[in-house]
Length: 234
Image (cartoon, rainbow, N blue to C red; front, side):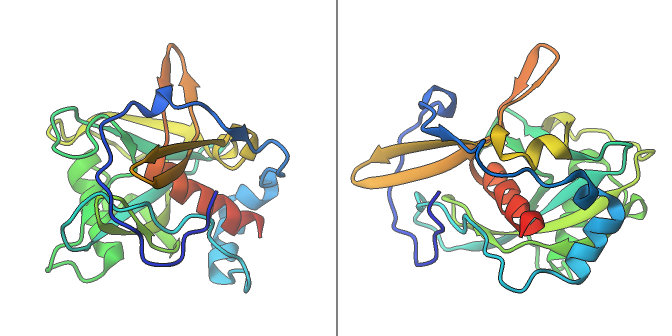
């Protein structure tokens, strides 16, 4: 995947089903993050003393919006089960943007938010009822610019498993968890590409089968998870 670093070009992408775009490759040749690096203590230590020379792999998507960039924040909640999981949501179908997609809880940074961390915590409480006292923020990952012109700050946090959650039906259709080990194993990272009007968009997907349902993790959410993998593996 291209490690984007300069100003993204603008293009209007047509509507398409990402699940119908062919898989170009699967990164099973890359090593998974060791289990010992996924413990709460190891995660706290990694953010307290991050590696000096690591590089995020995906920084932005080709822009398809003409509006000015806006600051946003998401919470990357790692639930402290015996085997840690990442808490994700499925966005409601009636939302005007990214409807039905898998996402982290989060949204636009409001003027009254003291920081991106405050914004991520507020949005998580509004969307899924996650109260801040269940959350231990341990750090942030590099910002990720979406094609819809949001500059997203991923705020990584440890979450107590006894927390009580409830989805805001106006924003969230489903709340689910995916094992952190699954997401931190590149054998589950698929590469895709789509070309339109001379612009090539590339992305990862990480489909997760839970019972009879497949949660299709792709786009910005998968890109931030890929950066998280690079951060832990560095």
